[in-house]
Image (cartoon, rainbow, N blue to C red; front, top):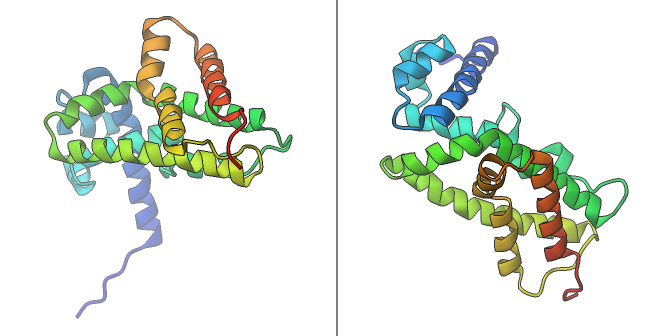
Length: 212
């Protein structure tokens, strides 16, 4: 039996191609939506073949990886809350600076992904893969808000809220791309104004006496 062999160079090149597809796909999905963006259009924009798109699993899989890259800001798709810059406490050791880092990262994530979220919601109405992923994303965002609270508490910067579930829900819904879309795209706020508003909401929720 012939031994299966994967060349690291070949795999690196294949991964670079997959990333190139996602970077080319992001503005297409954001501008035209999920249904109106065809596999052929994706391949053409990325300068690759249809076989490459199918090799990534198809349009839904391309979209989901594109979304992950857009949210994270890193091409390897590292989850936002696992980025190195958010894994350590600020040197100042203050809650405000820690929350400012989260608000900045989330605002940038919203800015990069806001158009994709509209496509995500649209696609979830008709594509079973996206529907399942959309439901999972809500679960993940709630979990990330819990992780945020626990991380801040572990750093000694805040106490646990009396109702941690309610506080976590208020945290992740404040940072949801729909708020960014409404306030920045429709109400004319600048991203900097949104970031300051988000920081204010975080402080209101976490910078208060709570249970030990």
